[in-house]
Picture 1: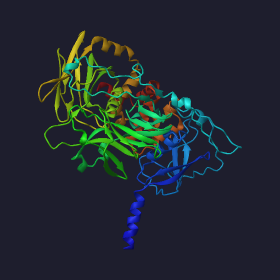
Picture 2: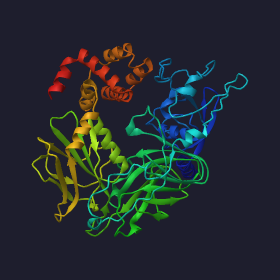
Picture 3: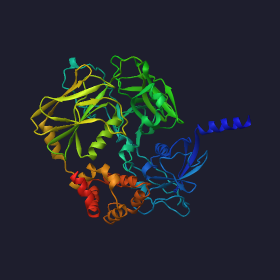
Picture 4: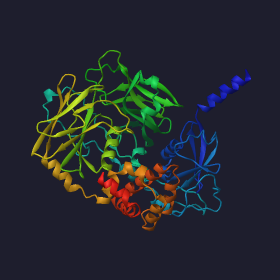
Length: 547
């Protein structure tokens, strides 16, 4: 009986929150509420929310002599209540090496260079006061840096999606977006964009919408809120997928308890003729999902008052009848700038910002540019197939039909390739519902759209090559040590960045890390990498060019 009680007590402890102390080398100490199932990246998010000094990409966390890895949980490192985790700024100037394995990380005699706090953290206006020669630091985030991120919701300042030229009487969707005061979040520029961590610095009472994700926060005082995208496929179990369908992005959000009075979570269900009782909010905590009822369901969001944060997203109970839910959707058209004549990629996706951003990142790596077009004027339905057609002769491959479904942003989305040998002055495209042959979208592509895009393409050829063949290079690029040495000699990377690449545990991850690093540094860095690759492995470059 005693053993059963002990096991129950331990289970309760493992699934509850507790506090740990994080101590910087400058003596700054901060208490952070965590759970054993939090990842190291979750801990960095919480630190970032509590104090902008702790930028995630600029942070290395050390416990018991070990550098903590973002993907692992605190349970993995035996971190318990009142554990002390040491924080070290990642020095991007190359003056300190990344830790490998377990080393002596004693702070004795160490003094953190002052300039890293003043200029090394992007997007932060801060000042430092050294008190009595000790290591105490006061970081002052100036209110003007917060207010610089706030924009009013005027028509001139909010970038709207292009409006359909279809007459209003033909449109079957009457949902209207609520216009709110926007806040531009701080974004950690050194983290790969697909893993972006956002911080909304809200200056005072009000309702604010994140310009990057569509999240809305209602607060009664100034607040710092940190959030990032998560993936449904990782957290929504197979049994739950039989009952619930994702209806918007999944977010990992953190703020101090009581900071946020309400959160508006985006969804893409068209409510024109839908019973909103099927709408719920999935809350994942301690590796378990609980279902919460929204306080209010609006045209493009579900409101949850007094939220407790972790993983949150809108889900919809699957209908037992054959009737499917109507969805808001987007049509994305990209022109491949390096392709022959005019080559377009057309996507048909739910109106999910995380999916749209993932497609844009992928297309940018293929040297493509977005041609903005309006969304469909009728709601679409999961499971239906939609046919793309044109009023002139074009080639549509692999076939003119697109299935409409929700795919994780981490997966390749469905698209059709449209090849136009001779671009007319104006071409009209249509999308029809395969179930009833009704037109759900139409838009014109004008020759000016294409020529204008070509004029803005100034990507160096080597950089374009690296973007176009990034997937193949991840698996095929060799002689990495020699490539890294040449890049360091050319001052493209520093010694710490070289060690960060080498610290990855597989060849493919090393290549991926290096290619992402060069991409973040810009076209000139990618051009240098291409030149080094040409010198070290000309046969690989030639093979990829011929392919």
